[in-house]
Image (cartoon, rainbow, N blue to C red; front, side, top):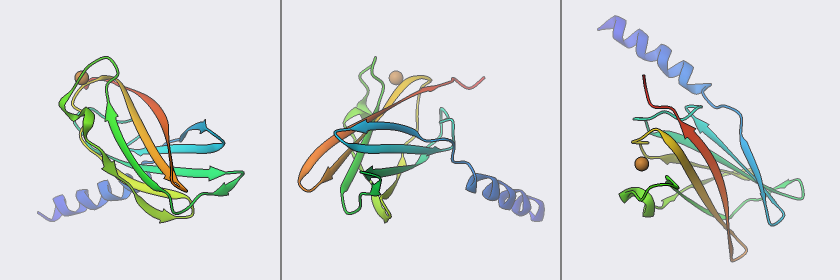
Length: 131
Ligand SMILES: [Cu+2]
């Protein structure tokens, strides 16, 4: 019991530093970055997402941000699930991705609406099947 609690605390600590490098794309003058935790993404696991938005080098705050995740080569029931991200301030938005059920190519499409106009940034990931 005690040992399990210690192990849990250690796992919790290591999870705190699990953000990898961002993928960054430019959309219509916006610089959009996405971090995932875990990195790389894992089959059979949900993940946390952190989305950074900048324009002309300055953080872009107060936008409405959602995402969906899908596999480009396959229709899946989760394709149309849209998840809202929270505005964490400083041009950073956070959210929780649901479980990745399969290995292969996935896209995370982040739609950000700033000043009434929606734009989409697409990020590509290849998940390995667990051994
Ligand atoms: Cu699939």
